[in-house]
Amino acid sequence: MQIFGLDIGGSGIKGAPVDLDKGDLTQERHKVLTPDPATPDSVADGVKQIVDHFGWTGPVGLTFPGVVTGGSHIRTAANVDKSWIDTDARALFSDRLGGLPVTVVNDADAAGVAEMSFGAGKDRKGTVILLTLGTGIGSAVFVDGVLVPNTELGHLELHGHDAEKKASSKAREVEELTWEHWARRVQKYLAHVEMLFSPELFIIGGGVSRKAQKFLPHIEGIKAEIVPAQLQNNAGIVGAAMRAAQE
Image (tube, rainbow, N blue to C red; front, side, top):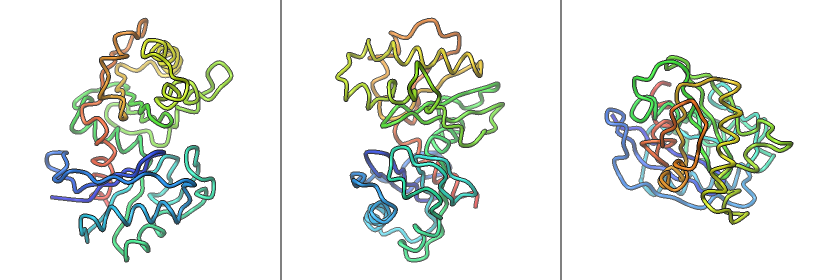
């Protein structure tokens, strides 16, 4: 069974058809840059470009970088335009896509669901936390495989700042930090999350997961196991499609 998955991020929008039996993309994903400002209308235009690129005419699952309730309503918008707040995203995207069935889910929750089904979290019990280190920090918390939605742990306060302002991949790039220096910041963040939740496993996702060997070996003192996401930056696309298939 194939469903279209689409991942809206702070820097890029990417999508592809997904084979739900294998948890993998059936075609090479297509990507456009996230518009600036990332308003509802401009992002919807980017979404349409990607769906049109594949000539897709079936259900579409989309991720969003913020709290999403009821598969449609946006409650927070940290890394996109604030005009998203209280938007009915399902109605917006469905209208822009000519009435196609649409489901919207938090981006990290989607990535987490994919990793728990097909990747690093498969068959893992206890508390598992996926953290996507990208433009911001997204989180997905699972207890015995069950998702606790919309946790948004990237906004925990750490040393007087939103954690994602210091420990995201974007912070590393903007401040031109070495991998080792940045790893120490990630370590402090993981220690804080571990103190609050005592997980058995941290899964590190986002695009930076492709370069896990550059920073994970520098992280010390964390009791939980730490592994890179296996689906890497495709996890959100796969998880969005999985969510759409449940509708």
